[in-house]
Image 1 (tube, rainbow, N blue to C red):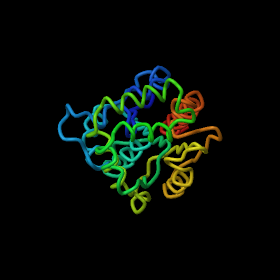
Image 2: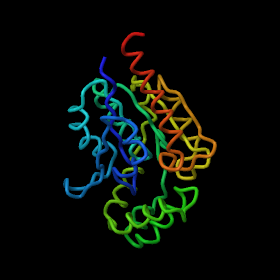
Image 3: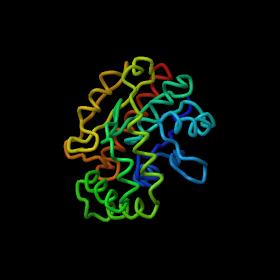
Length: 235
């Protein structure tokens, strides 16, 4: 039995490097860009982002596991619903079946990207003055307004509540108890709607649990992968 292949999907305002704590831990895993302007027009919906990612998933050796953070989790859900035979497992972190954002969020990113970057990182990190948060804020500012605005529009377009029952792949849902951007009740709603899901809420976790609580997330992911491998092997 081949060990599960893992593809990491980042959230809005981030890139593949946000998985720096996870990638060295899981041999053979990789991360992809969801909002890379070099790939053409930026996707405004999770479904459009999923279409971009699908070829990379199909090239992976089975079994295939998608690990999505925030908006990346929305993309992972879209992929699992649209291509059920391709996705064998899901790890959904700080995300939900829906990701509400204010109506004016896309325009805020266009009108004052610097201010919006400060607001976003201030809410995403438990300590917004930490080096990780400062680097994230600088990356959002340097990246311009297109990617944040597209990511906000994609979050607003995301609502999988009526389709969760069609996703049969086993899932691990991880939430941060102190996450103001994706409150734990959204993760709970997601886990309850999926046919085969287990919810873990990290008491000290913020939105950026993958970095600020990276060791805990890695242990949870390792356990999920081990159980999935045993299950697929019929053990």
